[in-house]
Figure (tube, rainbow, N blue to C red):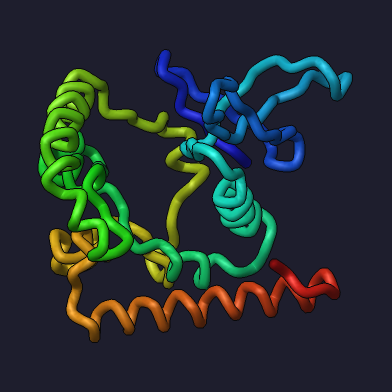
Length: 212
């Protein structure tokens, strides 16, 4: 079952198999791509409601396909524990608003220390964007799922999967600036690579072909 918290405070619900997902783009010189889910009427053609997944990719849609495969595997495949290993960073927003510091860290996140060369230019822009982001967070309501949804999604006390901000990298600024200790980086890379390989093996076994 899918539950969607809408900006008007209402909650949509629909079985996963009954939602039609498709790529979506507003166009433009450098188009950005997202994923929309359409809830259809009983005729299977009329769209009665639409929601978007939290992703926006500019240029190539390859990353969009990878994002979709993560969601699809979570909903359809038996590999949740391995998927959890692929998540390196979670916003600390459970029952609270995002802080200015984390918002800035999220905006500044780098993939390589080579990006340091752009820091003098990007830092002022990130600070401005961080202030705007913080204002948006402070003036937004904290989503609260209805009790019926919470009751339907109760987590077992002994559930081995825990994806939350509690598992974020210990030295968050070093992670954001691509400056972690080699041991920390290599340990996380090894875990993620092993998890990715296990997922690929499961999909290959189920579908009888090599997965991309």
